[in-house]
Length: 332
Image (spheres, rainbow, N blue to C red):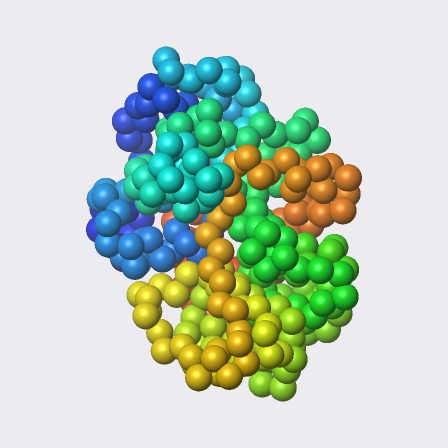
């Protein structure tokens, strides 16, 4: 699935096979997630994307080619990968913070992505994650961006504790994941979304209550903007108690420098935290919770479509109500 210019119509067509990096692998894509981040890329909100481009960054599949320098992986391995592929050698990587690697690559953004039969991935020994046999490809496709991003935001960045109150603004894939994960940690979760379908789904995943807006929400310990807009960011900050924690997860599109209520931040001594993906080496804890049944990302799956249906689905993600009701995966 290819777009030639930002915002232009996408097409499904034959392209050249991806080249396998010496330090990387080529994966046959079994499932890839339909994610709003790819919509932002297609819109040109990241002008550095090389054109023409194949989008797609959430994926799971089977290794079909291995680079000469790869030591830990072989053909036939069932894998997923974080959407940030780290170099393994820069300062953040050496500190274990591969999700903010200084030389990161991202399929679908820095090179052709996973809305294709095959995708090349860099630095396999740093980035690949082995899939347990009981985690199917459709479920795993959502782990690389939405579920893993929410997991790190809730458990590692916000460090949500049992008994705390958590507001989740926006109940798409990331937000619904955050609801499930925060509830599993014993938090009281309020899900905020204009869609009644998404609010109902959030309640089924562990939210204590839901609301159409955050106008009357106050004194939350943690608040997460899982949608990504100036209005939801400011609403998230405003609903916090003194010394509360705001976590920005949702991308803000082309509004990369929105006005922030810093007077409120100072007066309440609020913490403003960013969260950007999750490093591969931290996946085992999340996978263990999935295996134990504490977390059930498969409950977020809404729909599966073929690659021919994907262009219209992806282009529609900017429309009101798009993405409501869970996660859609594509089978290339």
